[in-house]
Image 1: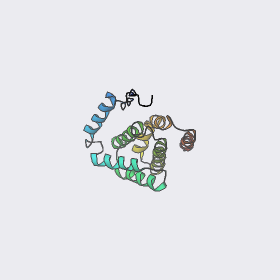
Image 2: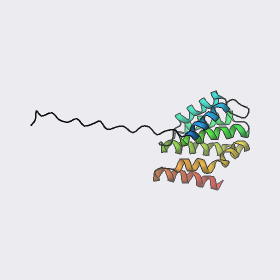
Image 3: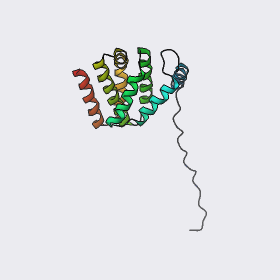
Image 4: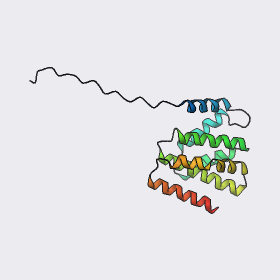
Length: 161
């Protein structure tokens, strides 16, 4: 019986990666076409900002570096809106499975918001405030109880200001 040929079972098929929706493709194409246009970040600025977001950790230094870049590079509401859009896009796509990264992004935005309120930089404050619900919703979704508590602390700080 040991020498009888065994029947080979077919290899299980791997699930193919999820397809990227047409909406995401269209948004990305529109975004790339818009880079460098008046009121939009240049491709170099977007690349630098995305690198800062990708390197973002919970450390004060990484948050300070990203905040400094934002404050140094955003002048005008349309640039601030574009930067917030890049942030929101990253949170929804690249960081969708990284709950800690999303919390770190909210820490960054909180620090930026605090500094802009102190320095009366209305363009950046308005850009963040007008997208705050979407940013928080992206940060909270599929996040652990511990991280949700951290996010609630940030929100309560914002409410106090």
